Length: 448
Image (cartoon, rainbow, N blue to C red):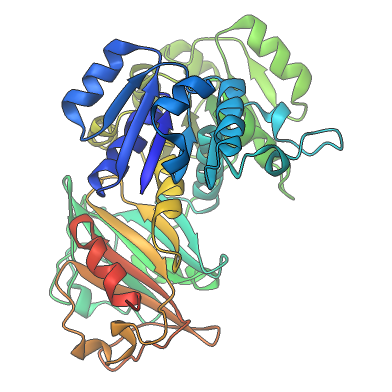
């Protein structure tokens, strides 16, 4: 595909990197010539200096031949105009990054974006808030993703010495309800087999029916904590979206937001009733001590700075908080977050890349979850009639070691796959695959 990315901030760079690695023809437009030089030196892309909302600039990239435009600058209005202009030029798919909730909340006077040429809106901060909300619902989880309209869940867990599964081979575990579809050891994703031994500090991804995860304690033999408060460091966009989600719960927890900016703190306190705001620096030990943090709290640090988030997370862990969620903008900082005891690292840009990849994959791939290591994916795929995967039983397909079938949904029934499992056209199949084998997955499920 020929894809234009408008805006080369962190989000734009990560999207461009992912798309170029998949072999797409990527053109980046940005006003800053220096950042474009960095991209041109490190990525297989074409760069253009200019205003991505300008029809003249879009003409220079032969916009009529473009399949998708992704406008992901920090300026919502520029992104909207870029998409509207591109749609006027005949671009089939236009995607705008819009962060301001005033433009996307429900209101009778709001514009109908599809009528004005915007096909899809992405909001990294809202995606991050949704991810955090799901993680709060499942204590100890490092990842949380839904498949098949929420009927299947993918849960990430860090193996610790106290868990019953630590030191056990997968074949020796009682896994009638779940499939271990991935094991991350260090910075590498492993393909789990029956003889794979689960070691302390491994991260595993468990796939199973959403209703079945109430039986998770029987597998790990560790008491699930019950939390008294949700304490949030930082009052930025992610925190604001998260608070609104928490306030919609039937049983609303006690919510505390610590924000050092007095003006922002006062504004949020007026807008978000139902939670407590404290104007203080959450990276200072005395600030967190005043809140009497402990094991029955969830601590979430969303300050927009990796350094500040990691400092606050470390302080919270040292005060006995077990459930610490941390926003990490840079993927290379995720191992550092893990070292200091962070339960789960949230990377908004990675969530955005997942959303974008769905647009460029074949139509029978309905969901994608890119692992934090970046070298593997979880996909929800619908086999087409006469596709290779439907012609043999699982054991006879000769799947390479980098591809694992995690679950099959046939006639609305969830099947934990075994060697004699037969996949049928129009089933929903959850597949774990190493990045380099994604084209092979597409070929297996797609009738040429």
